Figure 1 (cartoon, rainbow, N blue to C red):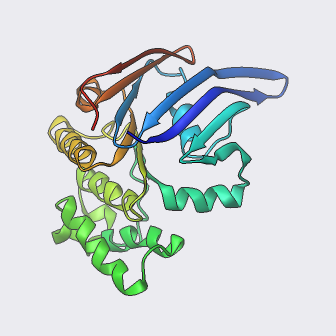
Figure 2: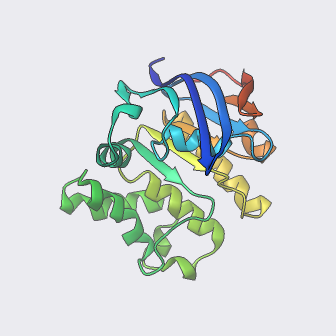
Amino acid sequence: MQNLIKLNHVYKAYTLGQLKTPVLHDISLDINTGEFVAITGPSGNGKSTLLNLLTGIDRPCQGEIIFNGNELQLLNEEELSVWRGLNVGIVFQFFQLLPSLTLLQNIQLPMDFANTYPKKERLERAYYLLERVNLSHQAKQLPGQVSGGQQQRAAIARALANDPALLVADEPTGNLDSATAENIYTLFSALQQEGKTLIIVTHNEDLAKTATRHITLHDGRISSDQYVSKPL
């Protein structure tokens, strides 16, 4: 398998006034293309911070983060923004869909920002992605006019708009009922089986079990790293 992400001795701390609070300690990690990784652990142990570092939203205090040959810690904010738009799809716990845009328009937006597809192809691709998550019949609805589960599926479609190398999600089923969450598990597994690389932060053990690899953080360190099933 091809290596996609490499972390070398990553350390992260936050400073508030005179107080420095370490969050991640000496994290070294390799993630290959096609893996479905679930990151779990108690609250406050660095899961979301690790996700933010992997996506270039935050920067390490020490160490290297190399994504497909790009050393993220060496990129400036503008370069990181361009890189992220082309390489990473992010699914947030609270959906973060723009309320004044239809689901279709929300999915087109990343393509407009990154200019990844010819304009005449963007509408067709947005419809395709809505169909992929079984929402094509809701294309013209505003986010507030559909259920939470439908908003989350639309958010996943939006994250896939630019066909990113990596899809990440932070507690993607935290606000969903169990039946709706099960649909999200199935969708993530299908994406992984098609070759997409996924990294999910979750407290949901059922979602973690659908992943091919399970990493546990404790006190800002990797306490366990196990393959649940053989990755593609």
